[in-house]
Length: 113
Length: 111
Figure 1 (spheres, rainbow over the protein chains, first blue to last red):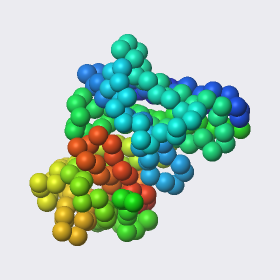
Figure 2 (figure 1 turned 90 degrees about the vertical axis):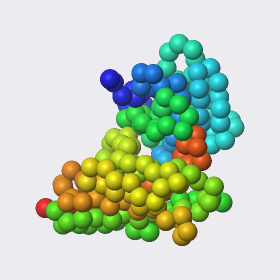
Figure 3 (figure 1 turned 60 degrees about the vertical axis):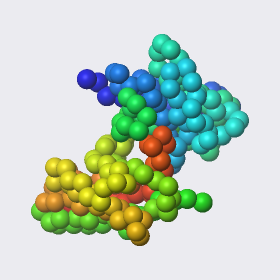
Figure 4 (figure 1 turned 180 degrees about the vertical axis):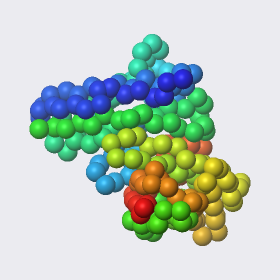
């Protein structure tokens, strides 16, 4: 049973470019959560999605950031016009139902030059 | 605002000894608490969780204690091994819809 998968593992972008981060939840999991982690800090919640629905996006910046979890395929976190401050590790977690344990993927490390 | 914090940012323990990592939380509405272990370059790995209707829960070599009166959470690791070296995060949630993480404690096991 494969765990949560994220790709790419490392992503380098220049300022102004777009970054697309993908997350495939564990089999049978329909709840996906995205978190951001700066070096030497804890994870910060960004957005919580179920299939085709955004449930809670209270932690996501209002501009340039968007997330989706389509009926088919992985969840996508999209960052438009990246800036250096977007450099961080982005982690995705999934759970089978609300209230169940969240299991994390290996993360995508975004570096903005 | 509400926050989750850790008392000690670093902890060094002799191999074979027991370790205790502490965590304070401030959201009295939180009903779910969880400990994750994160090794360098990897994602958080679930260790153990506890709900607010319990005050103690045990796993393999790990025990989580919850004191709701003083809003305190601790993780005890018995008979530490070199592989236990990592950063440990506590996190809290209401219904586990979104987790609020603490800063983390770096645990180093001394051979």
